[in-house]
Length: 247
Ligand code: AMZ
Image 1 (spheres, rainbow, N blue to C red):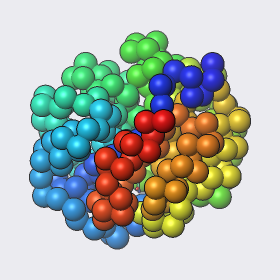
Image 2 (image 1 turned 135 degrees about the vertical axis):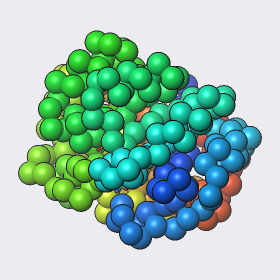
Image 3 (image 1 turned 135 degrees about the horizontal axis):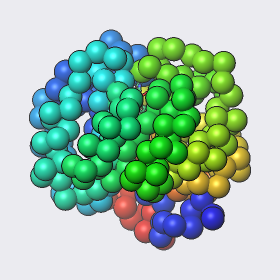
C-alpha cells in the first residue's frame, strides 16, 4: 500500500503535550526546558477543534518520563472531543492501550514498550486492529531514543521501522528529537528515507517552523505531520495550513 494512499491529503495534526496538567512545548524534548502555553488542556482541545483540526495529537510527557501521569485529564478530553485523538506517552501494556482505545482513542501510540519488545505491537494490533496502533520512533542521528528521549539505544531507526511494520504497526510517528521545538526546519532526508524503508504511513514530527517546511514534508510522501511550537507561536495560522494542504 502506498504510504500516502489511505489518506485523501496529508494530515496536519496539532499537538497538545501535557506536563503537570498544563499544555507545554519542550525544546529538543528536554524535560526541564518547557514553555507553558495553557493551563487548560480542555480549552486547548476546543481551540484546535474550532480551528478545524479533525485529528489532535496528545502526549503525556510526565508518563513518558516515567513520573506521574496526566491520564485523568486525557480521559476527560476523550469524553468531550469531537476530533479524533491519537494518544501516547507511558503506554507500556496491552491492557492500558486497550483501555484507552475503548475510551475512544483513534490511534494509540507505543514508543518505549514497542522498542523494548516489538511483540507488544502485534499483540495490540490483534486486539484493536493495526490502523489503531501507531508506533513512535523517536530518534537522534539514526539511533532510537526511549523513556522520554532520555535513553539512547544502539538500534538503527530504519531497521526498527521495518520490524514494526512486520509486527503490524498501522503507522509510524517519526520524531526528530534534535529538531523538536526548534522551529529550525524538519529532517527531510530522514523522513524521505523512512518513507522509502517501510510501506505504512509515516507521520513526521519535529522542527516545523514555516508553511514552506510543511510543503517540503508534503513532497516526501509522508502521510502526515505533527506541529507544535510553530502553531503556538503563531508562525502561521492553522487555516493557512488547511488551505495549503487542500490541494
Ligand atoms: O519530548 C519528549 N521528551 C518525549 C516525547 N514527545 N518523550 C516521549 N515523547 C512522546 C513520543 C511518543 O509520542 O514522541 O511520547 C510518546 C512515547 O511514549 P512512550 O512512553 O511510549 O515511550
